[in-house]
Image (tube, rainbow, N blue to C red; front, side, top):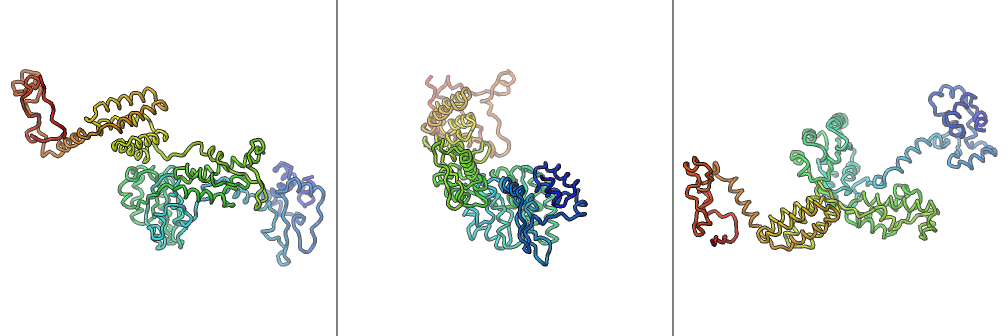
Length: 556
């Protein structure tokens, strides 16, 4: 049947057979598309004029009647039906927009697939600064960024903030929000790029600047992953204005970026998004029919307010986590609808939406909980949050707030912190902050470390909590800590060479040392409890490092 249809259209026998063999021999439309688009057969197709008028509706004559076989083919493959077309009297060639769909099917399908398979957070990424949610302290009307964009004088900046707060979005939106075409956006990732990629981008930026006076905004994501020499490569090109540098990092720039680079850039700090910011983004995903949840689930999806509240309150200010969770939950609900499990599970997840007249899936809180698995915690065992939390734990214990100390301990343990690291810090705290006020605190901390080493997580969590509570409630004294600091300062700031040990304090194990004067004049305190002698060098006589009551003399 397919062969007869191709022959009736005017294609040669050999060409029709070749097209059917290449396309599987089951579709006349695919075979026709192959003939018209295959480069190797271009010369053959130019020697004849196929009878394509059956594909078009001419305005001069009625549509030719369809055969029964053609009607059956259209019933079987409705997605491949050909659109009617018209020919103008002045232009005998069919208009491009009215040609059969297989002329444009490949390009349209490729674009659609690329769009659908993008993650939801990427599809919904704001295009301009006006669409960015949150970070009002950076995007206000009179802010640095707004003023720079209005005057077309962008400075080099570093965007520092937690994941999912809009660093990449703001960087891209800066260029698109500009009222002029002066800036061109180039994006690199420090994870996959090196100095060569930076040099190539800079060379292209310089050529473009000379040719069209257009500046290049070079965006480098995860810039903290560049080492010192790689970061040095940015210095001269920022200095001479070859590029406008925009870096993004989740790590503290003070620790991970070189000082000369910080000197040339303005550091802008992004804050974690608040729940109402995340709720706005989630509702935007639900309502956007072109780029939102419908593209992910394939059907209309209804999301209740309690689902939005649950996700927005359990993502720790990360918009990417929130949108990913919503997308997974929507796909889960859509899959349940597709497999017809609503009646079996006794839930009403399927109903008819009046606007779309199609089945719609309802996302439940259980779907959202399953998508998140557990509450998302922003914690990095080697990053900024690691040091923030251990600092909060230390200061809570120092302030004798046992409740706060246990909370911060729980935050660290839930984030996956190594228990032995916490135990080591507790040992330090027992001596630094409790000290002589309760000498047994050090025993408690050392025992805690040994127990954590023996048991490991999760059994050692209560041992850590016990030690943290003991240290928080114990009396505090920093006398030893301050005494050590004062003594170290005296050693560092002493004029000239440090004085030698007084002779009477030196050990004299040999006869020669005794003859020289080692240990001469030393008084043994147990034999002479009431005696006094000096133990500091002459220049430090009477200097008091330890602020503590005088010792009790030997009673014999």
